[in-house]
Image (cartoon, rainbow, N blue to C red):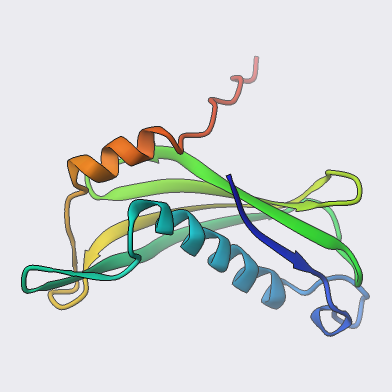
Length: 141
């Protein structure tokens, strides 16, 4: 699903003329926030507990340079679902040519914000996750 649109502003670029990593991460983080929003409020009070999400891992591939003026479309989906976690992938695509320039894979856990521990995903979360799964990638030969 599309989770964010943006533009590479000149002040996002470093001395080498391409979009700096420090400006890519906030866009990727915001896109994942929108993905998590598909499960309901990102933070909520259930009974006497404050619940939310916590990122525990990110792996980012920078595949192609982005420069000032590039328009971006970010798309996100789920790779797998664990007991309390979601493994997700976000692709940052240059709109003009459809080229995937950055891919982030991450793991985010359902989190009790007061106890500071992970908690199991609900049946409702699992049902919603089924509709957000990315297609399997072909295995290399």
